[in-house]
Amino acid sequence: MSLNIIVTVKQVPDTHHIAADAMKPDGTVNRSALPAIVNPDDLHALEEALKIKERLGASVTAITMGPDNAIEVLRECLYRGADDVILLSDRRFAGSDTLATSYVLKCAIDKIGSYDLVICGHQAIDGDTAQVGPQLAEKLGVNQLTHVSEVVDVSKESITVKRSVENGHERAKSRLPVLLTVTSEANVPRPPSAKRALAFKHLDSKACDGPYENVYLEPDTCIEVDHIKEWDADAIGADAERCGISGSPTRVKKIENVVLVAGDIKQVSNDEADISEMIRELVDAHIIA
Ligand code: FAD
Image (tube, rainbow, N blue to C red; front, side, top):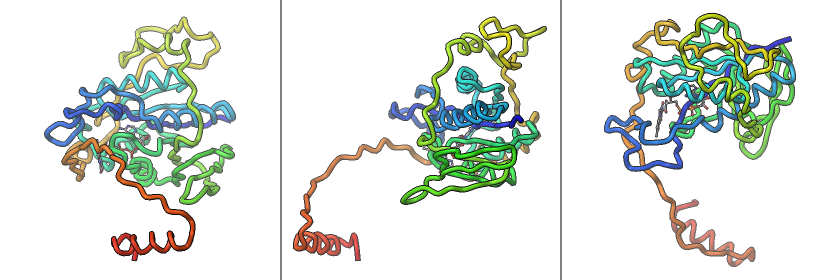
């Protein structure tokens, strides 16, 4: 039994290094001003796919929409164990909000064809909306299990997961195909394999001539990838009007580095008089009614 798993990965600016030049005047991110990394939640999504592959056998395809240098996040996925990777890159995708991003990903997944699981990170650390996964499920017309903190059981027909919900966890089961969004609670992502890094570090989007021989991998390693596939809007049959800025109603006006400064604190003991006094202060300040 073998499942087809698609993992969505986003190249994000390392938001630990936000500076004044982080935004362009048009409100889009100045990606050249910040180091690029794999969105952290997406490493957890990939890890979950690789764990399912180890349990049941699966083919894991990582896809990303981004500029040419987003190829780096795909290489990272290959280093960690992905079987195939696809870069969705086109000037017409630039400036996409979640609506346009999920549309492009949906068109690419339609082109890939059959799949059992789509696994996304819960949210990206730059846009931070956590909307792409749910919007993608909606567009694909499949069930979605969000905030997944553990895959409890999976078979060719169904999956049972533990979801983080307010004040605890719940178990949910869905038939396949299904889309999951995975949180950082789910697992500890494996490090890149040195052998695979040597094997794939020079792989680019140009197909090689002749048979692909990878001297760094064991002969029985099931890797057929000989180049990174690159698809544009035409290749995935996307309507250019629904991609990029023209397909994006959202406008980001400004980005700010917010530094939270601790204010005065007041310690309240648990005796009745102190608690009553605290409640009176909160009511006076219109914090509670
Ligand atoms: P999320 O929905 O948080 O991402 C969830 C998961 O979806 C990721 O973990 C990943 O698995 C997958 N995913 C997301 N993007 C990609 C991709 N390009 N390729 C492959 N997989 C992907 N857009 C809005 O629509 N509304 C906003 O309010 C908004 N605010 C923004 C604020 C800031 C400061 C910035 C920098 C951008 C904002 N954007 C917003 C744009 C946003 O970055 C894009 O819409 C982005 O393409 C997807 O949204 P997200 O980063 O919130 O992803």
